[in-house]
Image: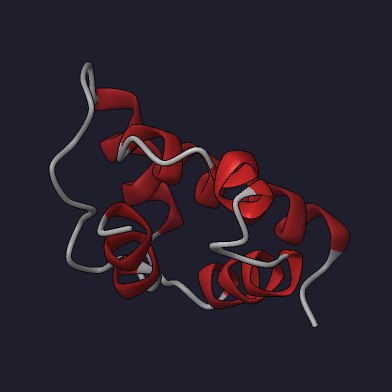
Length: 85
């Protein structure tokens, strides 16, 4: 289990990545397209990533909605599914 600090960092990364891709996770949850448990699972998946610093840098470099998440993102399939709905 990740530490509270790691979990918080990766929760921020997941939320920032979603926003950068044009996905509002809170709205998706209210619409029933994702559950809190699925978001928790996405954050846990993110904690296993070996490239959080690269992710931070990639997110910082984005000035507009990005067409795709980086290939190393462990939540690409989830983000793609949410954008397709």
